[in-house]
Length: 219
Image 1: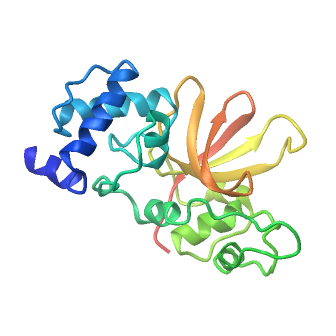
Image 2: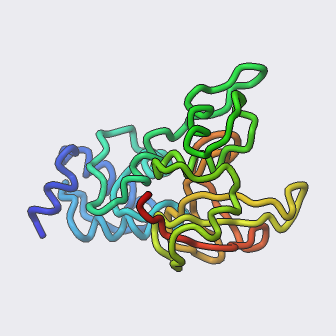
């Protein structure tokens, strides 16, 4: 759909697109540098994202551009149909805990949606992040989400509940959003309290058990 292509890439110039096409070609995805962000470029971008365990959107975003070594460009509008909680979750990418006795007020505020009273960002907050993204008064416990909503399998932006299988956190739970399909036993997810911040992370079958995958319901 040519009209759809223009809408998806309307914030990019043809020169921006050429830079991306050349970078993809340098990584083995052969493209003509014609400046048209069409179906073939989008398909190559999806393949590159999948190979690097990134959220598969077909469009360039910050993590992709860094891997391609392309200077930042205006990010195109997101794919149609992205759920509101995903857009909200991405809006705080990079928010992190404050070292020492101080706390990040944005993280602490998320606990209002988790029905949990704390003034410290050192309190485990992965579930509070999910509750905040959904804008529902839910829970501060990651494993609570294993029975929330409806069961799904492999659906982008579903809620994933994981159990640590190894290390000091063995038996503990973590919750986040599925951001890409599972590839070679690895699932790319967006979540809070991942390395003490909101970020994407890779969850592999060796170290994590996917206990449940759920689709949110309206509060």
